[in-house]
Every structure is written in C-alpha cells, then in structure tokens.
Length: 561
Image (spheres, rainbow, N blue to C red):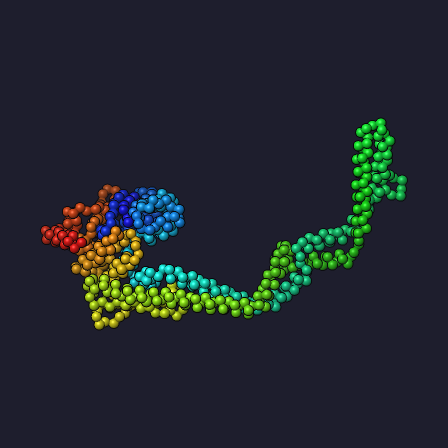
C-alpha cells in the first residue's frame, strides 16, 4: 500500500508531501491542475523512463520518493533474490535525476536498476489510465485475463517449457537441413581441399622439424667441416702440433710427479682427469655427428617442396600457423562426416521434433481445459458486474478457439464478444462497445481480477469517462468494494458521485505567483469536501443548491458505505 509520496522539482511541482490510506480514496481537480503530473511521478518510481526536461524550471535536480507498507503482501522473495534490505513491512523507493542527464534509483536506500523498479512496481501498483482501455482490443490482454482467472500459472509454465523444447527441436532440424543443403552443394570442393591438406601429412610440430631439416641439409658441408675441425682440435692431427687432449695429458703427468711434494696437486690432477674424460666424450660425439651429416640433394628437394606446399596452403586458406591448417582439415572432415551421416542425423532430429510436438500438444490441451472453464466463470462474473452498471441485458461471451499453430501463449485464441442489448448480435467488444460501456467493462474486469491478483494498490485515472448519474455511483460502489479487505484504491475523477464515495478526498490545484505556476495537492476536511463537490456540480459559480446537493451526496455515500 502506498503510504506517502514526496516530490521535489518535478514538472509544475516544486515540493509536495502527501499521505495516503487504505480503502477507497479520490483525487479531484480541474483539467490541467496537475493530476497527471502526480501519476507521472509515481510512474517514474515504477521504472518509467526519466527525462531531464521534466525537471522544474530553475532546478537542477528532481527527487521523487514513496513509502509503501508491504505487510503480508508476500514480496519477500523479490527482496531476497535482489539482495535488498527488507524488514517485512516498509519499502522506500527513491528516484533522482538531474538536468545533466544523470539518473539514480534506490530501493530501501540500496542502489537499484530500472529493471528492478519495473519488476517491483508491477507487483506494487496497477495504474489504469484511459489509454489502457485500448487493451480490450488486444488478444494478448484478453488471454491474460482468462489465464489469471484460470489460476493457470503452473500449467502455463509446463507448456512454456514444452514450447521451448519444441522450438529448439525445430531450430536444430532447420539448421541441420540447411547445413546438409550447403554441404551437398560444396561437397566436391570440400573433398578436394581436404585431399590437398591430407597430402601434406600434417602433424603438430612437423613444420618446425622440416624447417630445421631444411637448414641442416642446406648447410651440410659447412656443418660437417665445423664438426671435423672441432674434433681435430681436440684429438690432434698428423702434423706436429699438440692436441688439447695431449696437452691435458702432459699437464696431468707433470702434476702427478709432484703430488707427493705438494698435497694440493692431487686435487688438480683429478680435475684434469675429469676434463680429459669429458673432452674425449665430446670428441667422440663430434666425430659421430660429422659422420652422420650427409649431403643429400634429393632429400633437400623433398623437404623444400613440402615446405613450399605448406606455405602455399597457409596463404590459400588465409591462416598463419600449421595448427590452423590442422584445425581446418578437421573441420572439413566434420562437414563431410555430417554429409555422409546426414540422413540418419536428420531422421533423429525429425523424430525428436515430433515427440516434442506431441508433448507440447498434450500440455497445451491441459491449458485449454483450464481456459475454457475459466472463460465460463468470466462470463458469469462480467454479467454480475455489468448488469448493475446500467447494462441489465448485457451479453458477454469469451470464445476460446484453436490457433492454426501453437504459439508461446498456448494453443488458443481468445476473443471477448459483447452486446449491450438482449437480442442483439454478439460482436468483438472493442468494435461495438461505446466509450462509457468500455469504461464499465474495464472496471468490471479490474474488479474481477483484483480478487485473484493481490496487488496492494490500484489507481484509476478517469475510468468514469462516458458515464454519469446513478451509473457513476454504482462504479464508485464497485471501487469501494475493491478497497475492502485492506486493498488501496485511488480514483482520479471529475464526477461528484464518485468523489463523494471516497473515504479520503484529495484536491489538486494550481497557484500562480511571481516565480511562475506550481501544482499542489491537499487532503480535504469534511467541509472542504462539500465545497469541492459543490464546485464539481455547479462549476465556478458556487450556489446554495449545489452546496446542499453536495452535502446530500456525502451523506448518501457515507450511508451506502
């Protein structure tokens, strides 16, 4: 329930603080006084888009804040899922935006996203404005009404899951069939490209090995000469020059001869011996490698051809590495495998689609049964509500017909058919009902739905358009009934019969001063209500008769409530 509303610097409102109460309340005021501005401010708290042009002239920032009492409203799940503080009772929503275009929102002093405001707002307040009467022409709205009355949420979720599975199966089949069609068209090309890549004998790391082999074969003579030269320097040659190993041997012998005289010499001898062993091993390795280096022009030609083909394939397929070519070849193999096994795969997908379709139909029929039963209840409820509203011979029928194909909403099409006369022809509601009849139908729908959807607050913005007299009084009584059981109903109205029925009455008005025009709202005391309702009856010229009539309306309304 909306407990209080605070507005600063929004449109024509400089500052406003007002409290609201349970039950049925009314808001009155001349056209253009600012009633729609207050609704716009509430809409911002419910997640509507904030625009800097709505900030009052001369101000830099707009702040709108509302406090709600959510005791026993069952909204703990929202606060837990979104990690907002909540004591089980109070919720404060604040919206701020500046002329610089910055906008911020808070739920219980925690920053929130606009999407979270919308989610919470849809559960807090139902604002029915005049343009919402157009919803009666929309099939989705009519279907939603029936589903609410059918209490079909659980069955609808089961259907939705089946619809998603069916849609996915259809998409998978369509994708596979397109892939097959494209694959068959490109099969010859793919096979040719794969054969070329397979001829390379691609293996991870082979490019590096072949490039190294190419370098070795290209410089084989140079490599072998260097190995021989190093080996000769270690082992010695036939000339008189001393080899490294000979020099080490002589040095070891010299030190051994004095090892008895110099104790440290023995350690040096051991180290020289180790050097000799290591150098002998190196010399042997040099000799072996030199022997293994061969001059093989044919092998070099083969390696160079392989590398040339590899680089050509990389350039052709616009890749940079051997691994990318390997991945490309794997992709070609997969495409060919799909082509080769496509018929079996597509047959499996067709079977899956058919199975999911049958499950979808089964769940859809269960939903249809609930809707058809609810449709009969809607017809009875609407007749009960509309007859006292000046349409005693109303005919109201809810048609539930099959769709040509399943949709995300089910297997059904719903149409509201209406006729205000006993023997008249039933036609689609939006095409035959007058403005006043549309208003009464919409109020009746809201009254019916409110018993099922436990929204704390319902706001009607001039739902009484096109009606007057006793019909307006009965509409007010219906809104009073909706305000029972702890719900809050607020009606913005121009009709004195409705204004007199409110337990609380607020007046919106404008004032002009040196700084400009500002809108205000005040809660009226009993004597102020008499004056306001008298003005609604007689206009700007307040007459004694209008005052007496206003008093009579209030007395009658209090007795009726």
